[in-house]
Image (cartoon, rainbow, N blue to C red; front, side, top):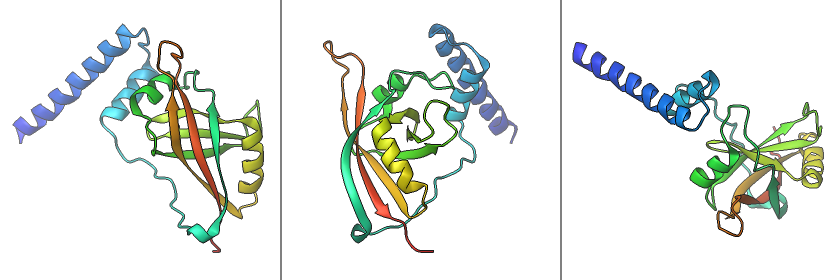
Length: 171
């Protein structure tokens, strides 16, 4: 029992030391960054998005759209470019989250991969989509269609989504 406790404690301490060293080398040694990296390393209970089942016959619209704002850094000090480069691949599901309190755009729709926010839907797309979502009669699903960039000619990464809108199931 004592050996298991010691090994667990040693793992946590080593993990925290490695995270601190890594963040220090990136010039981002602050409490928020350390806390986020520890949460990533030792995940606890996380809230899961609500699963809503729809069928293909409920599909209303489907289209390709670009994500914007990929060059920004998130509030947790994690670069969206880093998230895209390391974790985002074509076919990955992404979560769309309405931000009606967004000070720049009240129809804003944030785009999240499993590893954090990667940007927003373009304003015109967000406006059309948020108007539908806010009625409660529609739901949306999105997957990564394409990740581009990361080359000498275009070093910044960009993401294109395939967005599908469905009629919400009757409750």
